[in-house]
Length: 327
Figure 1: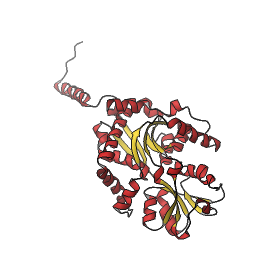
Figure 2: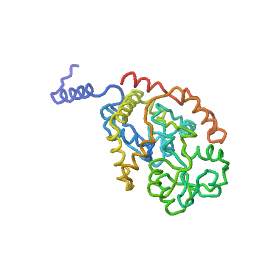
Figure 3: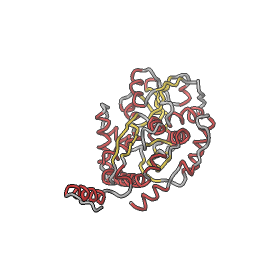
Figure 4: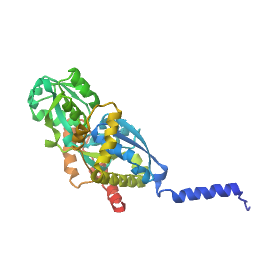
């Protein structure tokens, strides 16, 4: 039977075809990315990505989920509440062990952002002097795990030699000011704020122990659903890298506004000092596997994971290779 098409149906069909023709190719046009990020300085490159308009230029839509620390983003991803998020190697390994999470890029190095800070009035200068003190630590975070499993033991501090006070990194300055803790294991910009306010001094920087690559991780479900979206997303990250190099003041202003909007009193000089500790360079270096193997062996020894990951599944450089080829 021959069917007649009304003018209204014809126009509707034509409009749909036109929309499809103009939309970005692949599945990226239909998918909304659920982006997780931590609100310390490690997550600020991602925050900038979300504010820059660079995702929209690639035809990508997103929802954002900000939390105090990357290990919380990792937990959200294991629960499949978030698709993408950044955190350091130990959290990625834990996330792969618990939920098959996959690294699609290394975003930055943050070893210079992480420090052990001690209350200034205590006049302490050495890690060994922390024995018997109350130390604020975000338990379960990469920084927290590295402190407990590697840094503290290397300075003769076993579990039980100090009192670990569990709290989020963004609550630690208040605790120092109230003298409810003596020291904190924290990241920027909170370390710079504590120094500028005369509350704490730095006695140890993580860079000397671990340069701390931070990864952008994805759930395996998200990758399987839309590999084209992953590639388009990483192209936007390459755009972000260009902004960090060519327009650092624009980037710094966007991120500075985040902290001032949250009520932090911080000078531009203090903030730029904190920002200078973040090395943003999205890619997938070839020497990651030995580093990750070492971190995994530590976590396995501490019985925090069930097995060493299959790195062919946990580390996926192929998406970044495609992004660079088509950027």
